[in-house]
Length: 139
Image (cartoon, rainbow, N blue to C red; front, side, top):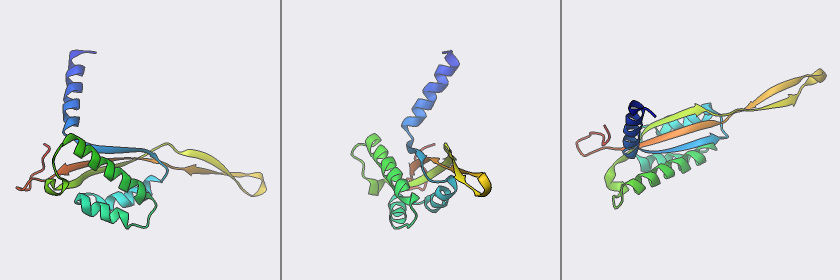
């Protein structure tokens, strides 16, 4: 590995230490349905986002709630002794990308077949905290 590559990799690792995130891979829900939920909680305070997901009737909200709890646990692992209530955590960024699609065939009239694509998605959730002055903690 060259020097430039090693230096940029070290910078990425240092930036990742200050970033509180959780990643969900191959969730068996279409990306479009998941984006409807992520739009609801994007920019929300963490406790309020958990309440919204808990009382949502959509099936994808269960996996998104688990992902948010995982991101909170990652934050607690990096901030020993800090309290969530005092840290003003909020959902700063959510990305939903398309995952692998399983391709299936459904029988159709007159000997034909229709293709069915069972979609999946990847979700990346990033938390951040707001200081009392209204500034974000990460730069």
